[in-house]
Picture 1 (cartoon, rainbow, N blue to C red):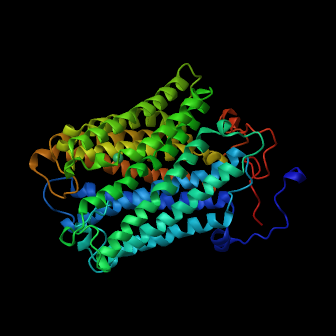
Picture 2 (cartoon, helix red, strand yellow; picture 1 turned 90 degrees about the vertical axis):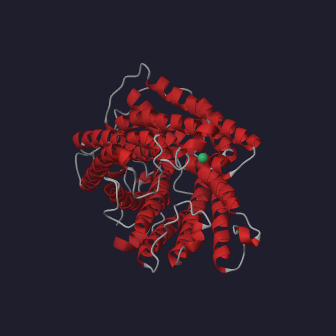
Picture 3 (cartoon, rainbow, N blue to C red; picture 1 turned 135 degrees about the vertical axis):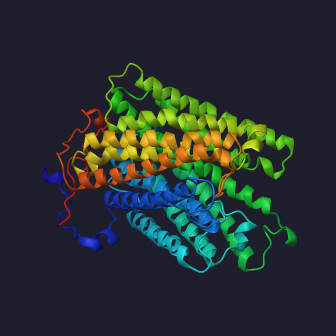
Length: 523
Ligand code: CU1
């Protein structure tokens, strides 16, 4: 190894647990985020398996209704804050410094703290299952007045969400500072890889809306314990105000969970099409417009709460406007694929599936944006189908595709391509078998978040449950593939994907020692 590229030999590196507890290395912290995310994904997925088992047939068989409410509430909360968001921060930690030629994140110690808050919050949420009264059962959206009825677990949830928010805000500040201040010479903003752009914009969204979430759950806390009446109509408050404040956070949150996914897809597709990303500049402006529009559409979650027609029209048209920049992005991905020299390794399969299936979620979102339609479909399985197409086949499948794409660089080994292909087809087919019938269930009027249902919904529910079990089992295969790749395998070499991925090195200076080709030695 070139001596000038050698790791700082004089640094002391603790080993074992101490290494992971005290690490300030962006790769180590990225790895921690990704393992934490995988653990939460499997746990929250296990909750979904129980939900699908209960819904396999009408009637109550497996869990009592309150337990069912806990399963749906915690499934949502843990998937959003435990699985998807930490996975993206893990990608940011690994890739952003490498892609912009920075030695590490701007605030390495803050970075360590941002991560280690997560297991604390995770432990609080898991512990809340075992306290008197049981875990959060009022839905992940924590609406009052129902939220007021809960026991100590609800206060634990408030504290946990505060801690998760703190972690997200600090992570976002770190990412913004890194991108704005630590770019290599020549790496102008409009030369940054698109993944870095999507994360820069996502980080601004996080800084803007996580404090709003913190505020609204603090108001819940003071309503519960300190005699305020923010959301209590009897005391002059307004429960609908909770929904306004919550969704002012909640809608941008949707884009926090999808913009980095767009960045991953925009990284994978050019590699396997062996072409430059089509329309880079329009991609940057599309992501920015989506982020800006996300602040003015929140009340589309609230069309049935009673709203002046002018308000309904505003939020309907504003929501439909988002289809334009989203359409620009899908067009650009298709144009990148068009006449490319294509190959379909596992990451590309996932990326293409995201383009197709996320679009289904986008279209059902347009359907739900229509006020008269939404009033019919509010709180039905159509909504459940819609956001699982956005969040599973959009966010989660991008994350999985990104893991396959970067695993060889992270670990130095190739993953098992044959098993990866199996994982892709099982996941994609089972996902559609699980969630596509939910559109029909919703159109037929089946309400969400209910453990029992009328007989006419039985067939589609059985199909959905069978799909769900296969979808869950397929993720065990994913864990196996990842663990196997981490432990060994064929060496990945410097140029994993025919060298097409070396486009990352658009820098004028040589990559720093911690580049992909020379993994840092921990002694
Ligand atoms: Cu929304």
